[in-house]
Length: 432
Image (cartoon, rainbow, N blue to C red; front, side):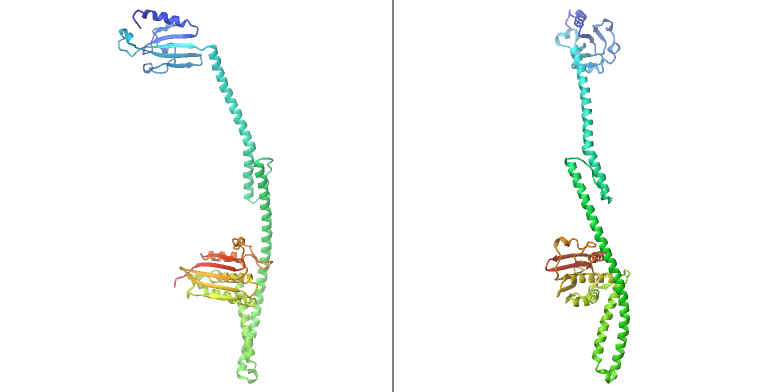
């Protein structure tokens, strides 16, 4: 303060504080002690004593104006450092800050109303936001969340086999369309399941009839075998007599024919008896050529009746694998039988067994009617058949696939309609 004006500082503060908008005017040193004040009783006291919490920072570090709003008392407080200017250094030497001016002003009515209005607006905005969020939640819960939960429960029920599940969602939007399509899908699934169950029942009934016929055939084959054994032994005896009796020598050729035919009947009945037995699985080294020949001999009467020629291609001498003879013979029987069924008359079935990169490749080819591409992926499914009426059970290829997989092998089918079908099997061979 310039020399001569120091004594007027208190007067100036008193004049400034006479304004009704001014609440307090103080001048403090850097330690917070009041040197001048609009309230004379504050002079010489520490600011924290006369107005606790008025200053919540270090005065000595203040280098710019600092403003606070005390909302509980509706007061603005502005504290600003009074810097030591060149003209003041005569009295204050080289001090950077001479003192600190603290001016407290009351809020005007307009400012109080504005502050109150602002608080009301903020409160009203918060209430509106909460109402909007609550409304959005109710809308979301009613239109989206609840229908989605119904869908989830419905899908769970369908997954558990409850195909009478239906969604009762009355909504004209996308959710309603989705519910209608879901109900239609479940209805179609239920119809498909009913059709499959009916088909399986028919197939099982047919399989049961075939089982009964198989048992009867086994018994008949056993009885026929007994009688053919007696006939064959008698024919052999007469042949021995014909060799020494001139009267019987003239029928010797007829006896040879009878013996040969009886032997063929016995061979057929032996094959029937062998296939009718429930054999235990026994893995050992077996020759696939021998197995395939046994299957061909079993089906020879049927193939001969349909005028079907069997062609074999056994290029490699060793076609030994580690497997079950009975199961693999069943594979050949089923494949040859399927080929025979696909040929109407005068056809050809080719069986090829050869080595292929350390494995044994079996190829069974026929020149029958073939299989359409859309059915080719389904032929190994249980109870699937392309045969008409009660001719097939739909289990033959399914059994073949399981037998081959049981032997750690693979099977695939290639077919052209009108050209024929080819089955390719790969099995692990046994080294010589």
